[in-house]
Length: 177
Image (tube, rainbow, N blue to C red; front, side, top):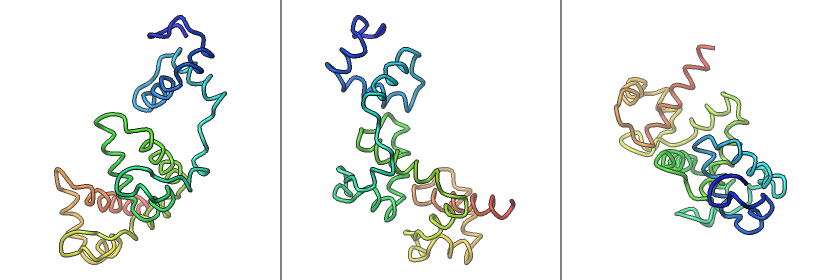
């Protein structure tokens, strides 16, 4: 291996004796660039046990939090703001392996959306707070653009407000294109 506490082991020995260490390296590599030797070890492990393709994970149970009994697909379709919240939490440190799996699944699906599909996806969500709580984000944008502009100017927006800000920025991007 050539580094860390397992420096004297071969990749195969480490893979067989402490796969949790390799999984830890995989998680850490999401947030910081691994050394060349760590990349090589991760590549070796991936060749023996490739991570699942995100599309195949749609029926996997979330397994944690208030949505523990939902599948990845159900949660992605029903409450995308929860996934955004998870992404923002990971700024404070690496998320759990289960949260990473869900985030990876959502990142894969989000990356396959066209800008128009992303706009539609965000626009269908309800505002969920204040006097406009029963409106969709799209309807709020159309009915009270001054309020949208006010929200965009807030210094510390809530998670719900971020969705509205994202929608406004994306809509402007699409309209200006």
